[in-house]
Image 1 (tube, helix red, strand yellow):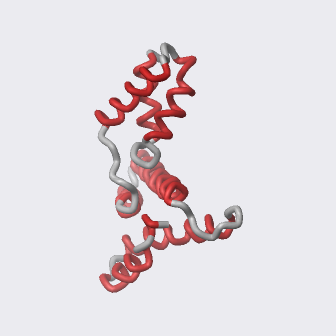
Image 2 (image 1 turned 180 degrees about the horizontal axis):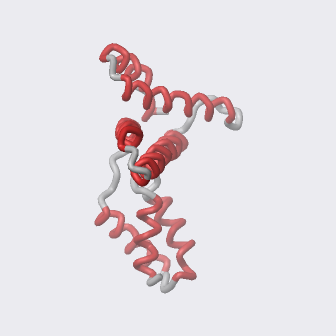
Amino acid sequence: MGILSNLTEEIKSAMRAKDSLKLEALRAIKSAVLLAQTSGSGSSELTDDEAIKLLQKLVKQRKDSAAIFNAQHRQDLAEPEEAQAEVIMTFLPEQLSEEAVEKVIDEVISKTGAVGMKDMGKVMGMASGQMAGKADGKLIATLVKQKLGA
């Protein structure tokens, strides 16, 4: 659980700074981690890969909620969700740029010899594996569809 090793210290500093928004996001992370540890398959510690997946899920939830609130013209509810997503993203590895993701997808397509949409699953599997935690799955899927001519 290397990427979450300083979570408790971050919570303490947010409490000292009386930063309620950051504190709420950090407590959400801690809650999700504790749930994952207790419901997991025997091991009490999360691996870095599991922690990254968990954090990505939390960020996606916040962004989806913010999008819904923005669609309903509720900025007062959307802004805290977006801010919490930003706090949670600080624990994730640095995300690849769209150009870097596109480069990896091009390499995967040339390795697999993919020519059409029938090969999308193969390309997605390899690309997602190579960029696990470093790129958004939706971005990967969109670029793969573009490359394979959907």
